[in-house]
Length: 558
Image 1 (cartoon, rainbow, N blue to C red):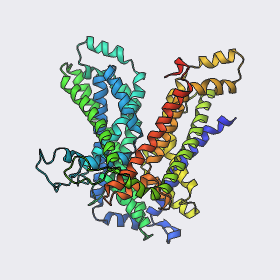
Image 2: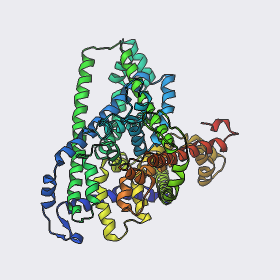
Image 3: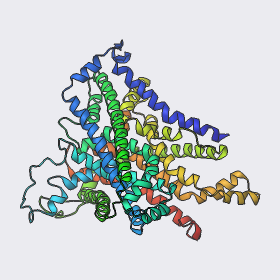
Image 4: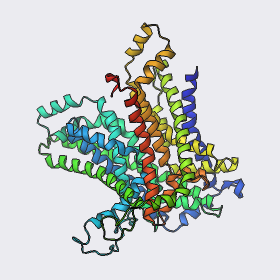
């Protein structure tokens, strides 16, 4: 009976806050918010938005960032999988890339900023021997006007995500047989893959690609750290307006949130056009009989791009760790002249409260998401049906830009007096944690061999005992991994915490992003390092616990 409540609860959780938040955004965007004196519908907020200086530039910047980040990330993943899938090297790189999914966007952005800034680690490595610089050059690399560093920060984080969803789709196609067939027809490795294998794979990862576009076109934390500031991206401007002490700015922010929704929707529509152009180009090449046999250069470039993406994140995280314990570190020294824990001891008193909020919100939202996911999957087993439209529902919180409905949700919480409360914060996190927990757990759950349960039933075991004593232990690793993914997502959430926490509930991520404007790299390094370590601790637990539990059972060591 309990499993019956799982699917309705998931529908309510995933769609309820979004619909309520959109309503709470749309009404003030048209001037209706009685609590702030808006008692009649009006187009004044939209007119004020249209008159805001640089608003078109901000919108175009967001549109460009969303399309560019998704395009570059998908090309890297597509060519890498086309060139190397099925090889031992592919398997090794896959294991290297997978942990990067746990790194929050803000931590990766800080790491990239510390690497590529004029006074960053890369400049220090080659100065003054190769450059002659004894002081940082006056170059605007981070926060550049075109948002190129922001796009780079998004690409290095979206590549692992798209690679992992592609890996999940890969077993659904006969890769080995298709490769042999196209090779026998004289096609190159990359061309054969793109002509015959990529189309069915892309159909399965289309929604995740849309999610990447929606996220990249409306991201806030990465835009604050790496994006331009004059003017900033549309999402970053909306947060400024929403946090303005002048409450009348809420009308303008709500109108801007509608514009952000339109920008992200336009980005996805343009992407669909690009899809058709790409498919037509591929079909034309195939019809022309182009076999592209000499593709060694393409394969090498794909490998280098994938490795460079991973190496950038790892190097950035290492730089963060060094800065967190750095003593005197003047330019152009490649390393600090000394190491000290003073940065940690100084920051520790201020860290404890955000750390507690981060851990509590992460654990509680993850446990609730995990329980609802488990109920939904158990209901699937009972009915034998996968709900129609469930994939779209799961991706709904990822497809709708956060700023488009969180503004409205914040207003609703304000009116109800629930804003800045831990339950409201956990609910906001739950909306984003739930999809990732479900996506992480659903494939291993559905791939479970049910013959084990049939054997247990044949031995007279009840369904409950079979579930507790057979299925759950066998799925210990994916269960813990799904919880680790959910906790990592919660730790990395910035905008939901800023808006629902209303500045009174802070987490490690919000504190780190707030420090971005201060420029104190040692303090930023401490917060960003913690932001990186917390999710990794979850994955360490997910790895060690099954290893310890099943150390005497060879078949359970997966």
